[in-house]
Image (cartoon, rainbow, N blue to C red; front, side):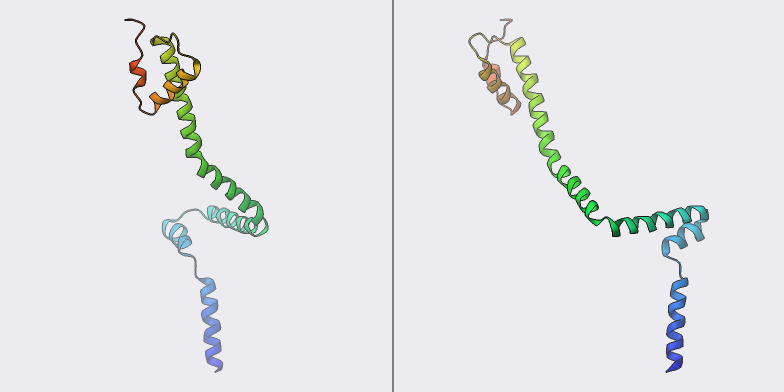
Length: 128
């Protein structure tokens, strides 16, 4: 029984001496400088401590980033729609005969045009 415990302790000590695969690859096989390994291990230690001590801050930050990433396409679509409507409204005012058309109708026509409508072509051009 005593030899079994000794071999088990010996195997545990040998496991402690084994290097992680990335250390073996980068620093033993490729030969990167040891200073870099020290910096990586310090950063790893501080990051583990940070995650352990500041979980609430980290979760809040990740929730905020996730929320912004979720709503970004909606915001971008709304911005593009408003830009398109402004450009279409300016085009209608400059190039079409808009006598008798109020601002609400111009806005309606510009929105219709941005979504693929063709009512804008029914208004006569000023040049004719």
